[in-house]
Image (cartoon, rainbow, N blue to C red; front, side):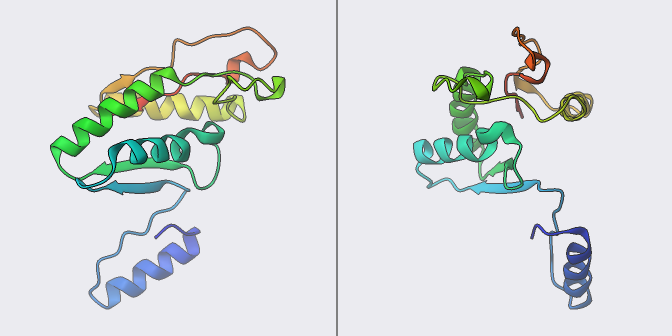
Length: 151
């Protein structure tokens, strides 16, 4: 369940009081679950749109995908890594149909994103696609960055 803090707490407390398991998520960190019998091509395309559309800067952006089974996870990661590395990044204002992902919203948010990446690596996560070395020219160039994939 994803909801504002007040509601999350209420749901969690109510579920706990009745001996029910509950995962109360917040902060717009939406999760997906991929089952082994899923159509992998369709799932990969859907995940790409949900995770990277609007540069991931929308309330319903997909932040985490749990693939059930090692084979499913390996297949999904290989497909996602290929598509993530190929995302075309550029300013959204130039109306270029080639650009698939625009800038982050602010310098503060860019720092937050980089902090998440650093924190993940420090905790043992492997950066499979690293977007940190990307640079372009222009007025909002510092807010443009390639997408990352962490496993």
